[in-house]
Image (cartoon, rainbow, N blue to C red; front, side, top):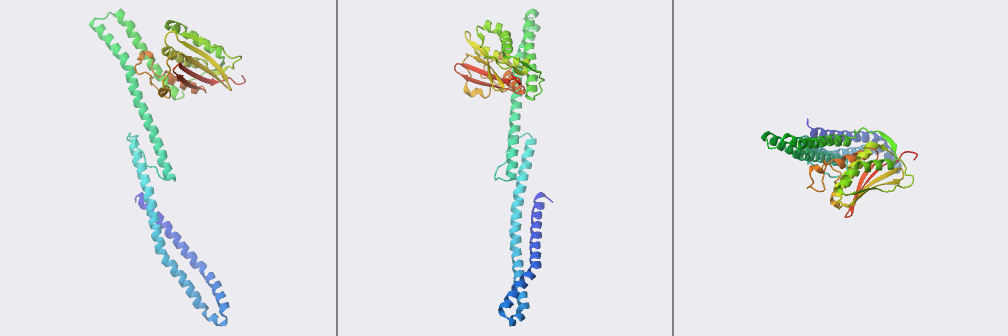
Length: 363
């Protein structure tokens, strides 16, 4: 027996049992009701009304029984129609959910269910659509990730093939091809390492070694790491004076330095020669904000919400030499895992990335 038949018969059975119980209750409680009212009528009629008492009781009982029996078919019809409509709606929702689930299992993540009403079935359809939307976004991200990884691998692999063919044809001597091939292999290694790290960061599986350190120590280490690169590009790298007695940070020093290094590398690419990049720190209640501010051209507003996505590039013309395309994704993920955040503001005069991390307790 299918679901519709079971639901319909179940509703109908409940209705029949309820009607039978109502009829039985009426028949059981009616005698006392009749006797009370007949006695009142006999008292009004006097002694001669006593002879009419049996006829009055039979008449009232027969009238009530006839009325109940006459109402039963109509009540049963209404109950059957109600059971039919209710069963059809439930079965229709279940069938839609079943078809939608089969579509999701087959990989059709764009499938949606109609949402109507405010009951549990409507909520179920809504939650199904939310699930389908999440799976659809995951699938789109997966496809985009595969495409982006393929794009990032294509350039170094093509370069390696070119050098290998040049070596094979004798066009390029080994002493010239070896450094170039090593450079491309390092690019592949860096991409593989970044992909492994971004997957661990997004899964929250990066091992951290939290400790307490000062903002001055961190900013000085970051500035020293990039001093030569900034000098070679003709971009000034400055560390702004810190506020008096800034609270120490509680985070992983090396991972925090990794985040700042990514921001400084991006700022160097975005800032033309003669420009300036400033490192600064600001104290907030229970937090310390570290900022990297550049004097570049800024980031267009339509790109601000997406720059932390994997492989997203503000300028599609950027080459693989500009990075693997997952640096900001890793940076924000590390910030979140250390209990902080990474945000950006930008305008025509440059961009400011703000890394917020917890201050040490009792500072």
